[in-house]
Length: 311
Ligand code: FAQ
Image (cartoon, rainbow, N blue to C red; front, side):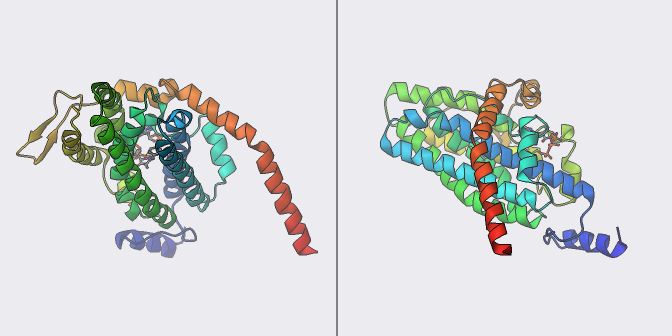
C-alpha cells in the first residue's frame, strides 16, 4: 500500500477516530472485522432459537407479546450487523453459507437448551447482561459501521436485560416452586454466561492485535470481571445464589474473586459438540431452505424493476 494510505490508517487509529468503508485498511484488519462482525450477526440470528422455543408456551398474553418483541429485535440486530459486514466487501449470502457449513462461528451460549420459562428471564438477565458488558465498549470500536450498529443494539439490549430481570423478580415473588425454577435456571446459565467473554487472555490468540487496532477496547478477562462485579448485587437483590463457591469480595482488588468456568466444556461447545449445536444449525438450514422462494421472488422483482427503469 502507498505510505500515505498506511499513515492515514495509523493516524486515524491514534486519534481514536473511525475507519470508514472507503478508507484503505490492511487486509488482516478487514478479515478480523469480518470474522468478529459475522460471528456477532450469526449469534443474534441463532440466538432467536432458545427463546423462540417458548413463544407458543408463554404463560400469559402479556409475556408472549414481550417475548415476541424481543426475538424480533434480535432479528433486527442480526440484520444491522450483516449490513455492517457487507460494507467490508462480503455478501450476506456468503456469510450465511459460511455459517451453515461451519466455517464461521456463533456464540457458545446459544448451544444450551431452554428447559423452563425461567430460562427466558435468565437469558434476559445474564445473557443480555453479558452482551451489554461486552458491547458497550464496542460502541467505540475503530470501524465506523460496526460502532454505529452497536449504539442502537446496546439500547435495545439494555431494555431486554430489564425485561428478563423483571420476569425473574416476578417469579421470585411467587411460589416456592417458582423460586426453585429461577434458582435452577441460574445454576445452569451462570457458567455458560461467563464463557461468552471468550477464553482467558493468556489463551486468546486475537485479543492483542484486535486491541492494537482498536477493534476490541477491553480484554476478555477485563470484561468477565466487570460482568461478575455487576451481577453479584443483582443476584442479591433477586434472592438467588450464584453457583460459585469461590465467589467473594476482594477488598484489596476492590473486585470479586471468582472460579473458572470449565474451559474444556467451552472448547467442546465451540468445536460443535455442545448440547444443541446440531439442532441449532439444522433449524437454521431449514429456515433458509423454506425462505428460498422469498429470495427468488425478491430477486425476480428487483430484476424486473431494473428492466423497467432502463426502458
Ligand atoms: N463462543 O481470540 P479470542 C448476543 C472464539 S451476544 C464461540 O478471544 P476474539 C446478544 C473466537 O471467535 C453474543 N466462539 O477471539 C443476544 C476465536 O475463534 P476464531 C455475541 C468463541 O474474537 C442475547 C477463538 O474462540 N456477541 O448475541 C467465543 O478476540 C440474547 C479465540 O478467542 C459477540 O459476538 C464464544 N463465547 O474475542 C442475542 C460480541 N469466545 O474466530 C440473543 C462481539 C471466543 O479465531 C439473545 N465479539 N470464541 O476461529 C467479541 O467481542 C469477540 O469476538 C469475543 C471473542 C470476545 C466473543
